[in-house]
Length: 397
Image 1 (spheres, rainbow, N blue to C red):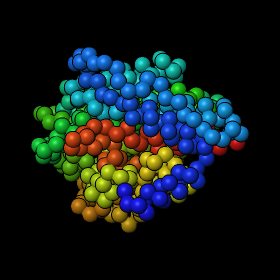
Image 2 (tube, rainbow, N blue to C red):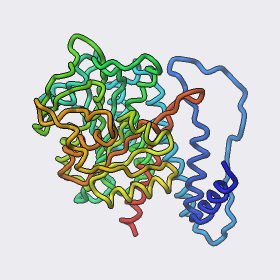
Image 3 (cartoon, helix red, strand yellow):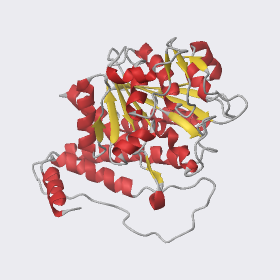
């Protein structure tokens, strides 16, 4: 980092509250100790190394000890949520399939005493989720639609809905992806993994909020029953979709999940999805793309991203782009051409999010990294948990 950049970072840190700095230090220390253990492989015995206990020393004698202790617990809880998201992302698709995600959600619900529903394929068919089901048609692993209910707030308070794209593996379907780095398509469930991680964190913190988590888990494979380019499907909303590219599958799953979210009369809905390579081209691996139909919600999420270090960048969601989704055979197509791919993907989903305040995080570039450090990053768990913490603190103020 250049000298000027380091100075700006020190000034930014020094301007923060002590509790914020303690929470960040707690999270970074806990996250720094993360190590992925491959299931079924015994770890080589090794002598214990490194610190077994860490103490944070502060110079401010007047600072409230309970406030700092809460900050430490919050930082540890966020790191714990990140670790779960990383574990799920790093697992191969042969292990982390839709049923595995459902079992993980049920185990969390049992541990932290919140309700979990798992809708099976037949349930999804009865609901009319023709769009989501079209993606998983050729997979050996049945689709699962996972719904978690964390009720920490007032019974009458509207819930915040978190929705995570959960393609446990994505071949691209008939629109087959290139072979290079295809193993990294196991990370296409990172949106759902992050929602599960957030639920672990908020339950550990016992945040006084009502939150619904929706994790639609499917696998996009090639086979005789696979959806074809040119097929038209009917979404849960009744809108029809011409599938021009079966590799633009995440939006087909998310659109039915957005329609399902309406039943909760949510305060807002936020989805996280490894949705487009176009967002990686635009923003790289530094910032997630943020799209929203409500400017205040977007501003809250941008602030949470800055405060947590898990940053996002506000992208346009203008009606001008909607024309790119025109279809001659359905209400819309599932792709909008080469230009502004991340934007048109968000515009597609915006058609299903008109009943509530909604934001979309495109985490295709930030949920995992390639190369020698290949692995899941646990993002956007810090951003989403910080958003929820700040909502809870505002209610308590």
